[in-house]
Image 1 (cartoon, one colour):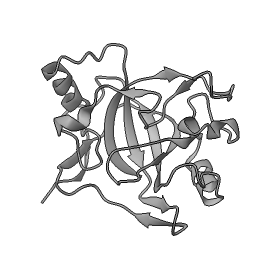
Image 2 (tube, one colour; image 1 turned 30 degrees about the horizontal axis):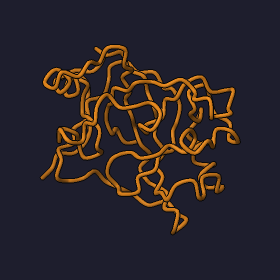
Image 3 (cartoon, one colour; image 1 turned 120 degrees about the horizontal axis):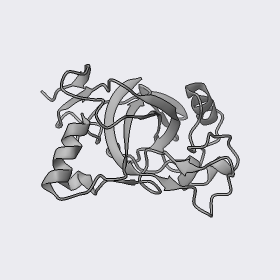
Length: 196
């Protein structure tokens, strides 16, 4: 799995239209239900995976632009090394956008919440998470956060066509971690690439 970055999000409870009683809230990478802390792309401080290398970068942006992080949940994400192409019906590697520095700091403490499947139609920022956005959690087993419990469950669902037609794709499998707000800092382990 590739470390791809962090986001603060406003975690939403299961919406009334999602008929999936096992789901309590939405921990998807997508911002369709659980919104991102801000419309952050316009700040141009994200990394090559269109997330953030550390919580400190987000916190500095929030302070600079008077955005409150109170009550928001800090997530850390990793991605499977390949994405699934709906048209080619196969897996292929992907890479961060080289024009942005990518140097993700690993958190000292993190708790794995599950695995999301997220679409990246234009290969930039995350788009839809069909388990929640397209109500696939009504027919695909998930945990209480609307995520797969294991990587194998997520990959098998994609390989077996359970996401076919939900979104254009490509799809990426995302490991979703909860992180205490103070658990990543300059001394934490670092992974990633720098723009040349």
